[in-house]
Image 1 (cartoon, rainbow, N blue to C red):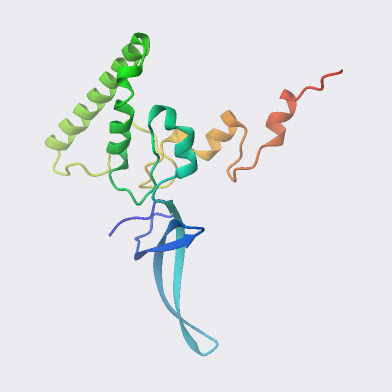
Image 2: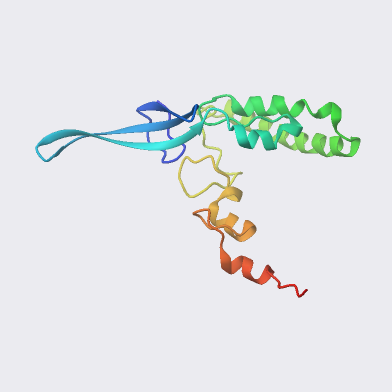
Length: 177
């Protein structure tokens, strides 16, 4: 059984809804039964998982051939790598050197992780917390750099996605005609 990426509870089933010809997915969490007004009611909680493919956002990344996928596409990470690798023939040599250097660092991290997994009895379970700081939720795969609180300081948005006016106010200047 999978864990929900939003609330980290077990997913009981996946629900699909169609709105304006597009399919959206929800993780449904069964929470048992309760008696309300003499009737037995099923208690469930739903978490929004998004569409299978993010069409509008993917249009904004079409110049690099990237199509962004939702939670329902299990191998989306590998698909992203394949899509981005299709840009390699079109990149400048300077950019290619930077890509090569970054990939070398990533490959060494993968080797370290595989060596740890082979020397450990636990295998490749998600216990790789020592090198990558995580968000405050246990078991989350959200890096600390994507923590909404730290993003508020860098991008001017608070945790609810609203613009933090106090951060942006000093940057607004009146221009006299």
